Amino acid sequence: MTSQLESILYIASKPLSRLELKKALGVDNETLETAIIDLKERFNSPNSGIHIIDTGADIQMVTNPENVEIVAKFTTQELMGELTRAQLETLTVVAYQGPITRPEIEAIRGVNCAIILRNLSLRGLVEEEESIDALMAVYRVSATALRQLGLHSPEDLSNYSELHNHAHIVASVEPNNSSVTIHD
Image 1 (cartoon, rainbow, N blue to C red):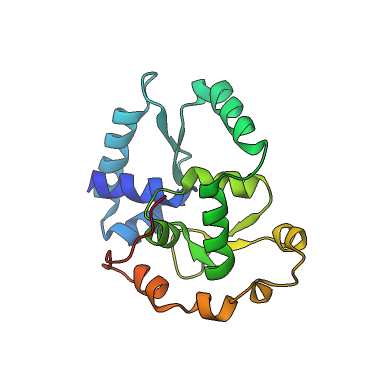
Image 2 (cartoon, helix red, strand yellow):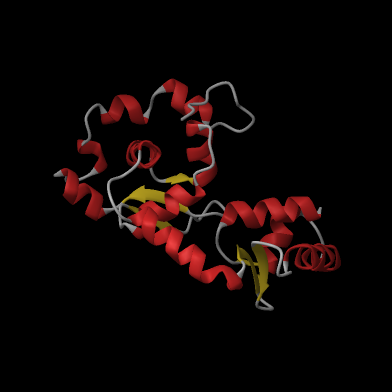
């Protein structure tokens, strides 16, 4: 159960309420609290790069506050210069498939996209918004990105309708389907 909680906190990348967590995990208050305590004991130490924040209402997995300077330096370096191939690929997936969740993007690309999505968000190229149907946010291409591309909407992208509904891409994001993945 603790492992499942850890996975949900990692993939969500945002604070989650205890109610959301109980619902997602199908557990009672006591079981959830035990798992939260286990995670805090494991992660909230000076030697861990990951910490668990508990506001009393919400729980979130974050970087160790002691590492704020190095994390800021890294993210600043990542935001300068041209987009990398991985960033361009991720932006393309978001543009053609959005709104799309991070796990769906990762299913299409075959790699973890958390840092890439954060960088694209910080650059103002993708927008993160709450999903009514999921515990996690969905991503869509931003107005800034469309403006920079000279487009009015994602539907103006070349071959949009063909690629938006492409059978291989749709199949790759279906639950329990790992037959189609695209790697860096």
